[in-house]
Image (tube, rainbow, N blue to C red; front, side, top):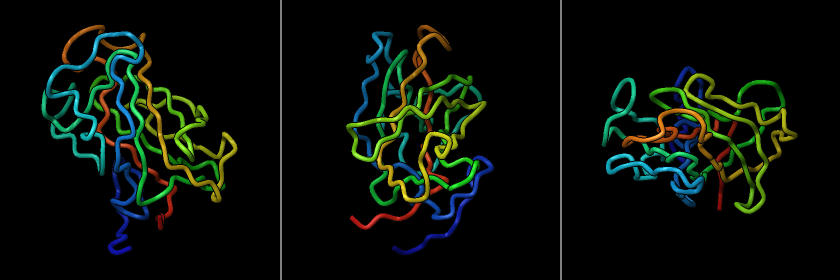
Length: 178
């Protein structure tokens, strides 16, 4: 694998550079929780892939490179060229780039896309998670991150309803040969 130049995003160092970010959408279910869904310009889940690229400031507008989950909505992203791992310490391992008004998402991780472990919540105000605190370590190989909007937060309607996701990055990561 070429060009593993470290990059800094959101104040965190991603040692394997742009390879550290989710690069596939496994599923997007904006009506998972039964609430209203995002409008046009906010409902393209591929906008959460790769390195953060939110082009606005404050609460997002349409076509500013984010996806809104919808009130209670859910999205599963996959790392295909790398794996999320633990770090064997209390440092953050995973970062959720949520933008606009800080709204929490429930974060679950999985090696196989079938069995998930809840590793807490993340938001714009608290974007990082230490997965070691949940029994993971450097030998863990996590490919999937499932984000579910906490439905009782944020606006109940509007175009960008639900948490607004720009990217998901594996701070603790190794490249994958698949």
